[in-house]
Structures are given as C-alpha cells and as structure tokens.
Image (cartoon, rainbow over all chains, first blue to last red; front, top):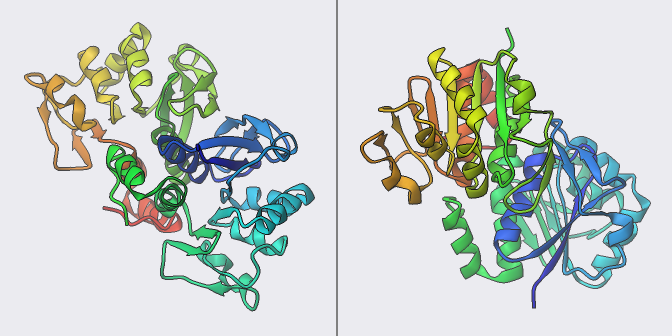
Length: 186
Length: 186
C-alpha cells in the first residue's frame, strides 16, 4: 500500500530542505501531503513563497505513516511554539510511526519532549541544547534510531530524503530515484 | 554593486533545481527576482506550488546581470515555446550577460538558437539533440564557456548554483555559503 507522509511547512522553513524532501519522496512513490503549520501560503527562509496542500489543523485527523519537519530557524521556532504540532508528534511517537527532522528542526522534538533518550543529530550550532536528553552524533549526515530520522542541513537534505525513501519504499526504488536525479548516494 | 539575477519559473519546472538556485544565490547576496514564465502562481514538476515575485513580461524591462533557467521537462517545453523568453535570451546574449541552464533547460537555448557553437552539458537523455550545434560535455557536473553556464540535474543543482555564485560574487563568499549549508563543494 502507498505510504503516506505528512510534511510540515511553517513560515521561515528552509525551502531547499522542504522541497528536496517533498520532491524526492514523491519520486519514490510516497504520497506526500504538505501541511502549512498555520497558513496555506507560506514565506520560507529565503523569501520563496510556497502554497501548502492543507494546514496541520485539517491534516491532523488523517492517517499517516510518517511526519517530516524541515529546518530553518524561523520555521523551527514556529514549530516549537505550536501546541497542536506537539500533540501530533506525541501521537506519532506513541504509535511508533516514523518521525523525521533536519537542520534546526530536531530542536522542535526537544521542545515538545518527543523521542527523549534517542540518538540524533542536527545543524551543528544546536548541539549543546541536546545535552543530557539525547545522544548526539556529529560525524554522520543522517542518523537513524528506531522510528527517529534526523539530519544536519541543506547540504545533507538529499541524503535525508533518500534515507526516508529507503525506509518507506525500500532501497531498490530509492537507488533508482537517486540515479534518475544524477545524485550519488552516501 | 549588488548583482541581479532573473530566475525563470515556468509551470512544470523542477522545483529542487529552481529552489536550490534561488536560495543559494540569495545566501550569496545576489538579488534574485523570480519571474513566472506566464503566471505568478506556478505548479512545479512534482506538484509543489510556488508563487513568483513577478512575470517575465513585467520583469523583461528591468536590468539584470544574469538569467537562469531551471530544468523539468514540462517547464523546459514551456520555455522553448515562449517567443518572449527567446527575445530575452537573445538580448542577454548580445550584451554578453550570464546565461545559465540546468537539466532539460539547455534544450531551451537550442530551440531559441542561443549560444550556438558553445560548449555545454544537460540532463544525459538530451545529449543527441545538441549534435552539430554545440560541443557536448558529459563528464562534468557544471560546464562554463564564457557567459554560458550549464549543468545536468537535481543532483548537480548545488554545484550549479555555487558556480553561479562564484562568478557573480566571488569564490570566498561562495565558500562561506557552502560551509554554512554543510555542503562539500566539488
């Protein structure tokens, strides 16, 4: 059955991290729903304006296999401040569903006390914030710990999206997609 | 003085190639104007909907240092069919301004007879179309020949954008931007 992923789009999201995730996973055959955190028209971190398919409020009642959070400082602050997103993340965690975050977005998990105790990574400057609550890895571009997948920045976004593809639809399909994009998997 | 780049956004554009170019060049300090080929709200190749700053018709009277065309099969067909874009590209060529195209977009230069005789690359499947009119390179991710910069696909989009940054604002600034994105320049 087709896998379904909920991709968050807050104002201030890092647009490359967002778009690479959505595009690569759609190429993999994942059914990706783009949910604005609050609005359907969203201004990203470098002023690219993207229209979401729906809002988190509307999407929260649907059933997904995975949720992914793009980075961007403003976007991550907005996601950290969203009680609704905190509830949704805890629901995904309680059901053992895939939770993915890149760049600044792992701080959103910290704020909402999600996936505590797991091993993760993030954009380097946030490292110290995770001390005592997570095991931090800084020598890998993508870190997988059970249902948690984290990554580091725009330059690791292809690897992040392809790892999510590998988990959701398998390595063979993911390799095909990488080849079609002329991307060398790491 | 701040460099100005006109970034085209046709329906069917490859959204990663588009967004990586805009974001990376804005990080480099380039003033990027996003011009929809015909409309200001544009559906890209994997259904991401992006709002342009303006349209080509409106932007064509402004002065730019460079123009860049994203790939995507649908987007490139639309750009090939645009008489207006053909005129704009010929105007950039006659003034020796930077012209950049990635993936399927170098075929747009072919259709409009722009930069004939130069050395270029493209997404591999279009190679034969350039025979006799351009010198084709297939062992480099980015090819620069005078004022023409071409590249191959989503997986080479960071290198493409960073090369444009290097030409427009210099290597030092571009290296800083790549480092901040955690991207290893090739």
